[in-house]
Amino acid sequence: MAEKISSLRESKSARWVVLILVSFTMMCMYYLPDAMAPLQQNLQSKLHWSATDYGLFTSGYGWFNVFLLMMVFSGMILDKLGTRFTGVLAIGIMLAGAGIKYWAIAGHVDGTYELTIGSWQVLGLTPKSAVVAGLGFALFGVGSEMFGIAANKAVVRWFRGKEMALAIGLNTSTGRIGTALAMFTPQPLYNLTKDVSAPVLLSIVLLCLGLLVYLFFNVIDKRLDKEESDAGIASDEEFKFSDIADIARNRAFWYISILCVLFYSAVFPFIKFATNLIVQKFSVTDTFAGYIPALLPFSALLLTPLFGGISDKKGKGASIMILGSILLVCVHLLFAIPSLNSFPIAIGLVVVLGIAFSLVPSAMWPAIAKIIPESKLGTAYAMTFWVQNWGLMLVPLLIGWVLDKYCIIGTITRVIDGKQEQLTQYNYTIPMLIFACFGVLAIGFAYLLKAEDKKKGYGLEQPNVIE
Ligand SMILES: C[C@H](NC(=O)[C@@H](N)CCCCN)C(=O)O
Image 1 (cartoon, protein in one colour):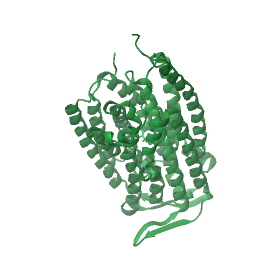
Image 2 (spheres, rainbow, N blue to C red):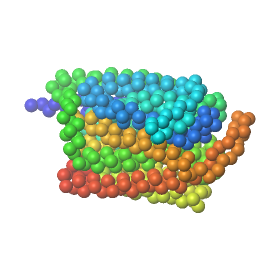
Image 3 (cartoon, helix red, strand yellow):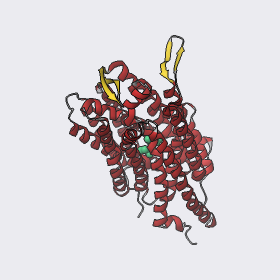
Image 4 (cartoon, rainbow, N blue to C red):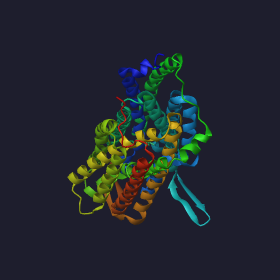
């Protein structure tokens, strides 16, 4: 009997075109989450946000994902309705969220909120603009995570048994171009327009472009469906609630998810505060300071596919995650040392963090595909992202609060747009120690994962490519 294979999936060029289309959309989507980071001080002077308000707004990304279990629904939608529909839906949600965020940051929302429950002051004179922008970001976060799991599943579908880790790595890397652009462009855009919302407007344009490109991917992916159904190859099984229980029973899955939340809690929230940290600790200008954290996604963008390619051929996935977590701890501890304050050190540390930020994701995302069957993969990625979103939500809140409560060392007066503004000065030692603690715990879970792999034989240390 003739072997049932799909010629489209076997075609290297078709696979790579698919990867380019999905990755381009990923890049467009990755711009917005970090686009406000270089403007933290400008938000402080223009919209009167404190570090706590900025932390609250930043934590918005996870609000709906965490509390409304949105990612679990996203996983179900994905496994039931497929990557094409889910991807388009996700981009629509991101556009709506970005629109709300733009409206709030563009200055259409005035006044403050105060919320007290009993004797607990939940919000103390918080600018409404920060809350509404946070709500827009929360909606955007739902779409962004939904798109992330759809993109991962699409790439796994096209690349399983081929260059899977390399492809996932390249997809993630292209996302890093979006993050790098989000670090490089907001200050020049602000200098040009004197408008803090200009980067959000740019993100809306990028999302519209991403939508067009993703529709093109849909056409090719539909052809693969047709080819597979003509060849009698079964399409993905549908989502079942028992999938969640099956995945939750897998100990290795929890080790990866906990490692994920710990590792990413020490990276994504760090990026959100990094420009301000570098201005404050290394005494460089706002514009130049924004360029230094941009080296992080930039080095990750070059290295993630390289490490993905290595782990495809040589394996060692669990060991790579241990190494990445160790580097993460070293970087944050060195950032915490007050006397290390010359800016070449900041550049070196950010580049090493970029290496860590390449090692762990390049091994982590393919590892999930090794321990969970493809039919449940959408749900599994969704569950991991759900765990991760707790960190993306709580850690910026924690860091913003710690900065205002324990780290203020004074204020300086600066002339901004012809006006004298008071800017708060912070010492970032405690936040950096908090980030380092997450890294230490991440190392522990990476070791537990390696031991579990040895016991259960998932093959995390084995190569991915089947020659
Ligand atoms: C692939 C992975 N993506 C995620 O972790 C997403 N849940 C969060 C995306 C947030 C975008 N700033 C990654 O980017 O490594």
